[in-house]
Image (cartoon, rainbow, N blue to C red; front, side, top):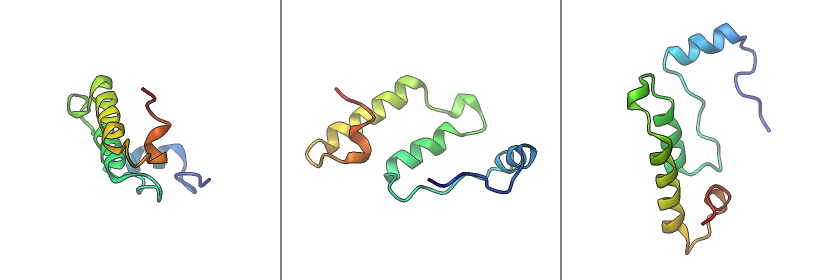
Length: 79
């Protein structure tokens, strides 16, 4: 596993994030999940999804992927 923010101290990390930077999408991360992650990291709390919205999006995605049995989704929500 790779460590995020290698070479940055805590202050640099905070500044980097406050400047709007985010980590890149991991190779095996589905696009929809990375987009969800980015929405969760929005600066304004009122712009972020609620836990219920997050759960529903993951559950909906799992239902859509049920035929494909995407291993990236299966471990998140077990119905």
